[in-house]
Image (cartoon, rainbow, N blue to C red; front, side, top):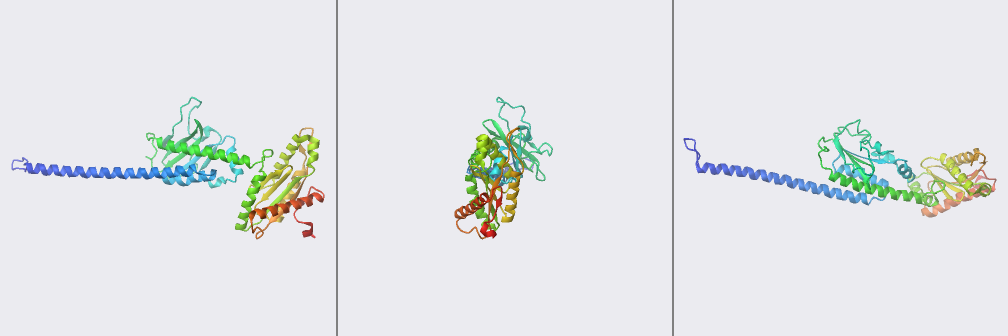
Length: 392
């Protein structure tokens, strides 16, 4: 309708208005469909990336690989500005074992250890066997309240999510997520997705830590707590290859407690075990963290010194000898023993590590053993770092 002089509409104008409204409605629907399609594609992409992330962490072979994957990948796929991980390590067992397995914690500044549940940095209330499973805590970032989970926060951090890591209803730590978007983590946000992600991370953490503990047990002498022969045999091959690449010297000590049979005959095997533990402790106190001490068996210990030439290794060996001989070993208030050690020291200089690493290692250890034999034969309680023929 068309409008007449009296202001009324004719059928033609009414039809044109309806067509305009319909076109606008269709355009809005198309825009809405395009938005929903874009969101669906984005959600599919996010889900695909997270599925790949799950596979990566499930297949992680060791602790550094798992932790490194979490910190490297999760901030990218989840578009986060900060990701940290807090683990409860009451007796420092995790840190001790990982350090023994050569994990360099300085490589993972986002990894935080606390001794107690309260150290996680957020209130979980009074917990017991009947307490409901704790839920993630989402909200605005507070520098004082979140100092523990975010010790080095990025500039502009606005909202955070603290997600408990649970295994069999036991809290083992928390996954801490941060964003510079103030609307990213709000108390009203659904948490199913991040809870699922945290549950997978918790499972992977428990599994890899358990495996590393078993590995540590398999590579450690149960009596003295130092490494065993299995570990040092493996480490020798690694360090020979590394020294070959980086062209630095490495040295090897073969240490034997003098007249140890007399110790067992005098104080029994229990007293002999105490002597072994104390000697191991005194040797370890003279070494750097990069060096490796192992019990080869019986009363024999070996030391692998990284980036150490013969002179410096012999100097350390003399310190060890003096430490063991310098004071009595107290087995009880009434009983003290004087113990000494003999040490053979062999060095592998740059250019001498060519060929099969296993063959090089066998020859190197045999050389140190022969020098130890010389130390024994020439009076004990001494360090020998060169053959008598070389010294002449």
